[in-house]
Amino acid sequence: MISVQTFSLMLLAGGLLMAAPVQAEEASANTTQRISPVDTRPSLVVNKSAFKQYFSGGEVRIDFLYPATDDNMQSAAYVTFEPGARTHWHTHPAGQHMIVTSGVGYTQTWKGERRTLRVGDVVWCPVGVKHWHGASEKIAMTHLVITGSDKNGKNVEWLEPVTDEQYAGK
Amino acid sequence: MISVQTFSLMLLAGGLLMAAPVQAEEASANTTQRISPVDTRPSLVVNKSAFKQYFSGGEVRIDFLYPATDDNMQSAAYVTFEPGARTHWHTHPAGQHMIVTSGVGYTQTWKGERRTLRVGDVVWCPVGVKHWHGASEKIAMTHLVITGSDKNGKNVEWLEPVTDEQYAGK
Image (cartoon, rainbow over all chains, first blue to last red):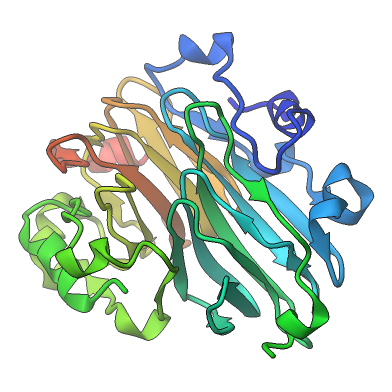
């Protein structure tokens, strides 16, 4: 089972949703399923954490689902943005899928147009594409993100903040 | 963007949630994000399809999210089981994550105990572990499944049906 400690290690590793190496006790458990009950994974309130430096415009919450491991180099989490909240510009070294599960949000690639996201929309962000995502101005947005990790366990490269003009789609 | 045709190809390939090879027109689109709006992906009602042979006990619906591609060898879908509905026994050649998003369900590994799944619970099924999953007797269950594909594009090996005794946890 994935422990709270595993998720803590992911955070201490210094990158949002970093891959954690598979733990020794898990390696021997591959003959059965691993169940992670919902009440074993505390929410991360971003503005109370070291990750607030990578977001702006409002509170963001991360609800971890599973970390990357040696036998599955992808991690997953729900990420919830309050109205106006957004990521900084960033890229993913191994790509990311986003599945909108609640509300209305935006995403934009560098030099591209701001796009509106609604529940059930799915976004694939290929390797190295500079982009941001977040909630709309008045409606919160939750998406489930599934993020690949590269060979070094890295899954995001943070860049500059999204300005209010960029957020407004101007 | 992932087209309806892509999902149809996945189905015609003969296996549930089979990997589809990345299409030529997508290969050149890696400089931006690919957005798949919710209203471009028809639901698959299993009992009206060729897949009904792999399920029993009630209706099952599959709402595809994204297919496996050359640059991301995992596919994702919501799978919804009516009360009593369940998969056959099966294994995954490249593993599968399940995230329960609605209702109450069950899962069981071969010779293991039946386990109850609730909203927010996450299950990792390692490569080759024989198991089944489905709804509970009186409450439907939806989970989001993220399924790896092996080098041949295969992501599931179907086995025998789950008997009523097995389903009852006896």
